[in-house]
Length: 254
Length: 243
Ligand SMILES: Nc1ncnc2c1ncn2[C@@H]1O[C@H](COP(=O)(O)OP(=O)(O)OP(=O)(O)O)[C@@H](O)[C@H]1O
Ligand SMILES: [Mg+2]
Image 1 (cartoon, protein in one colour):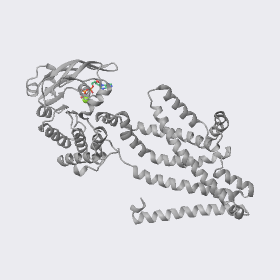
Image 2 (tube, protein in one colour):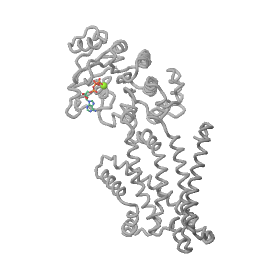
Image 3 (cartoon, chains in turn brown, blue):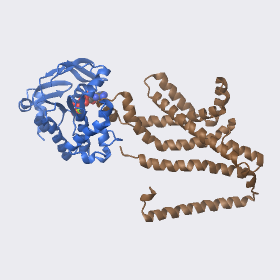
Image 4 (cartoon, helix red, strand yellow):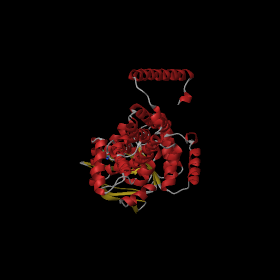
C-alpha cells in the first residue's frame, strides 16, 4: 500500500509517474499537432446526454452480464466436476465452443438464429445473454481451477470432522475459491465492459453505438471517439486499481 | 474400549492392503499400531475412523457393529476425533475458526458456546496466543496441537492419530507427543499409529503389529515389546530399536 511506502520510495514513485505522464503527453500532442484537424467540440457538447445515456446503458449491461456470468460460470464449473457424464460433457462443449469462437460471431448467431428461433425480441436481453455466456465460459475455467487447487488433504480433513459434501463446499472450498477469484474476476469485469461495445452491431443503444451515431450526425470523428475512450477508461481504470488492492488484501499463504 | 475386526479385506486396484484381518483387542485405553512401512496400518486406522470402507468383513467398536453405509459413516466420523500426519487445518481459517467450524456447523453449538469451548481449550493447552493466526503463521508443532484441540473439542468417543509427528522436527515432536501423553493421562481413549517405538511403548497399553496386510501380533504392550512371539515382530523391533 502507498501509505506503507518509505519516503524515498514514495518520491521515486511520484517522479516515475510524472515522467511517464509527460512522455505520453508529448507523444500525443505531437501526433495531434501533425493532424491539422479542425476541432469542433461544440457539436459534440450538444449530444452530451446521448453520451451519458449510452455510458449508463453500458454500465447496466456490464453489471447484469457480470452477475449472470458468475451464475453460469459457477454452474458450469460444478457441472464439469459432476459424476453424471452427459452433464460434464455438455459443460466441456460449452466452454470449448465459447472460448474457441470470436464474441462477434457468437453475438450474431445468438441474435439472428437463437433469439429469433426462441422469439426473444429484446436486444438488451440478447446482449446480456451473449456477454454472460461468453464471460461465463472463462469464469467456469477459473472457478474449476480454483476448486481443483484445494488440496486433497483438506477434503480429507473436512470428511474427518464430519462435514457433508455441501458443507465442505460451503465452508472449505468456496471461501478459498472466492479469495483466489477476486483479482481475475475484476479483470473479467473490465473485459465485459470493453466487450460490450461489440453489442453495437446488433443495435443495442450502448456507449459505442451512441458515439458512432454522434459521429454520423456531426462528422466529428475524433470528438466523438475520444470521449468514448475516456468513458471506458473511467470504468476500467478504477476496476484495475481495485483489483490490485483486493489482491493484496486476500492474499494468504497456503 | 474394545475393537473387533472380522475377516476385513481392503484392496486398492491390484494391491491387497489388508487381507482377511481378524483380531479382537480386549479392553484397552490406548492402542498403538506399529509395523513396517506399507504394511496396512493407515488403511486399518482409516477403516476405524470411518474414512475407508472394506470390501469384506465387519468391524465392531465396543460390541456395536459399524455400518459401512455412507450415511451412517458420516455420523460415525462425527463422533471420532481424527488427526493426520500434516495439513489437518484449513489454510483460510485462523486457529480459532478451525476449531469452531465443526462445533458450529456439525455439532450445532451457538457461536457463543463454541467460542467459550475454544477459549477454555486454548487456555488450557497454551494456545491462546496463537488463536487468531492462520496455519501458515504457526509452526508445525503448533498446527498439530491446534488440530488435536479441534479433535477433542467435539468431545469424541475416542481419538485417532496417524503418525501425528512424522512431519515434525525432534523438538516439535516432543511438544506434540507430550500433548498426546497428557490426553492419555486424562483417561481419553486413543488409537495411534507411530514409528516412534519408545513413545508407543510408553503411551499404549495394547499394541497391534501389522505387516503385509495382516495383523501378526496383538497383545499388551508390556509383553509385546519385551517378549515378541512373532519372528517378524522380533526382527522389526530389533531393527528399529537398534537406532
Ligand atoms: N488410496 C490408495 N490407493 C492405492 N494404494 C493405496 C492407497 N492407500 C494405501 N495404498 C497401498 O496399500 C498399502 C498399505 O498402505 P498403508 O498406507 O495402509 O500402509 P502403512 O502401514 O500406513 O504405511 P506407512 O508406514 O508408510 O504409512 C501400501 O502398499 C499402499 O501403497
Ligand atoms: Mg501410514
